[in-house]
Image (cartoon, rainbow, N blue to C red; front, side):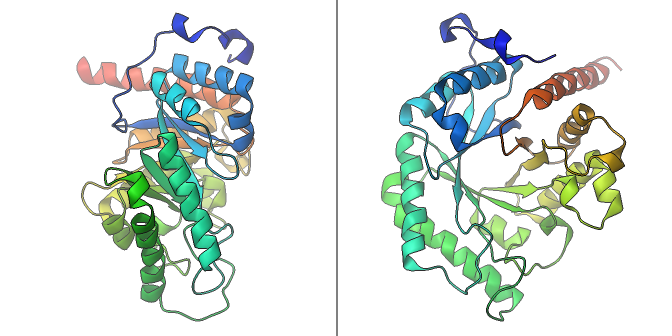
Length: 307
């Protein structure tokens, strides 16, 4: 069983993967919140454990307290690919366009991330509100509006971020499964303007869809497959998977197995990895699930090598 206490040690005594500066071919990582970023002891313990277990990526909050360049360099030294999560419109836009002040604030956060050494900017809440807006607008106009915001971010930050930064976005988990969405997200146009898409495929969030809620493996696999099939060739698709206990009962799985089968769903898909979301960064069960996932992954590889 995973124990944080057993992982404390000097970085020099641990074997570190070399950091190439490129995104891993298949991402296996965790979400990191501001509290973890500000807690040096927990930061070291958590990332030591991730490093020892073989995880290779982390999505880190940039607002309200960004990690320092030293922290980003620490991750790179551990062989962990850092991704900057930049919140745009929490809860979604309710007006047609964001205020200039808000745009300036978001773009300041993007510049901060680039100066800290991040090479991937992941735009979160880059959408209209799901619960209704103060205007009427066609699907196409909504897509165009959100994409124009993304273009503005790129243009206004290019002097700091350069031309080689990777731009990605979080999208609702339902977006790969449906033709159009009022929130202004669609796989096809987004993939024309972004390098990567991160569908939030938490099974518990497929409200009213019993099969999706009860089948964490299939929900992740299907969501990634559809994202890749609909996206521009070369677009990376990485799943946000569920590392929290909401609505896991219908799956008839233990919490640990529930997380594990989502990881396996990502592995067996056409996609490019997974990031586990737990808002409080309580990852004990996730890290144990990851160990089980690796064992099954190795067994599958062995069967393929020795049929």
